[in-house]
Image (cartoon, rainbow over all chains, first blue to last red; front, side, top):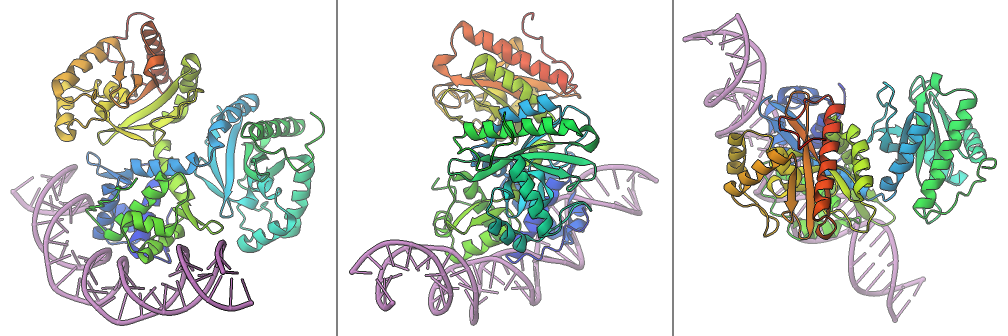
Length: 269
Length: 269
DNA sequence: CCTTGTTTTCCATATCGTGGAAAACTCTTT
DNA sequence: AAAGAGTTTTCCACGATATGGAAAACAAGG
């Protein structure tokens, strides 16, 4: 949490600083005090205070007088909510995510690509203890995520290569893919099977299975995945769960009026 | 959409302007062009462009080069999502909202108070045509909302009075409550029945029934409601639906380890 | 009641944001 | 193709505006 700094920001200083503070407010689970925020961000306390006040005037931050702590404000929520409202597949997806969760007893996710990263849009959590690694709003480099790879696999090879040129191969664990040949090899499998796998490429001990969802114009728009502790998702079970993920994805495809997958669907139903 | 302006900003000009733009991005269903945003906000195009660029650097805005339009960015979503993550009752509520929706075939809502307004946190929509009046992120003056009134009713009378002093009685329709005696009269009923009613006080033709959900420390933390076209929610049916709303609310209370209602629960189960 | 650690307000300084105007694009139109 | 209309994007000199130090107003202990 320390070095979220280096707001090298190619723009308006005051705005970048304010947004930086807002991110910090969002990242902290508890409310934050002015002086702590100032210290973290490397700003003068007075400056920080003024920026927070401005954020509050617009409803993006909220000050709790009893505890003297700052929180994320309702307006931030409202604006953020519009990010998903504009993606018309998020609402209908819930039904299928929920069923997936109940069938598998693991966490079901919905995500899409944004600027080289996979953004988790929605999630129905496993009833088991484990907290979600990547809650709604979370971002992972596309190549470190089953959903990310499932979506990339829907692109023409040339575009995948170009994508990798632009974004490189950021890794999150030692097992993350880190070169194009390895990725293309995986892509081949994904297309053949109809689903993507992430074996501890995002987080140690975590395995994910994902399948793409297609939109009306024949492009993949989002992906559905199930994520679980490695030890709970193994052997034959993997295939069963993968089948269910693929099913959920194609049902959502249907629901949103999407064109059926370009890929050969996996074996026969 | 015209006059969202009047950014009287009690703070840092550049920041207020940037946040104003962000709100506009969120409010529009489509992407927006620089020049339109500039016109709406009454800013110079170059200034607008610079501010947007800054928002983009931090991920709060996103520029779609193919269409030359600006959208809300992933970081806004991430920060907004943290607003609900911190409210630990939102996730478990979904189960009950969904059941409510299925039982009543109407829209079920979850909301809480924030700065005098009721903010809709989550929603499971009716399968009927009608679009939701107040989607997640939406705000209504507390006194114009069944959920708002249900929550106010959990406060001591003195605090309700003080609340009204501070916020007044903004009205949204001719039927909205607009003075303290009328409100207190309703409050009395709410406490007796265990649920609150909104008869076209928020929107013409809309009726809502709401009940509060209690937290572990004995304060109400949020409310659950069902909203429907007036004509579809009438006579004896009202009581049946109200009962279900109250049930959902007390089940959620239980689930989050809340203390049972201070009020006499409505009749016997 | 004084001390210590805050948050909040004030203000002179020069930094930093501003908006006009020009340049670089993108599409249509002829 | 070449010209034109309507954009988006970059540049720059000016001065309005954000800045951070310091002091004032709070709060909580000792």
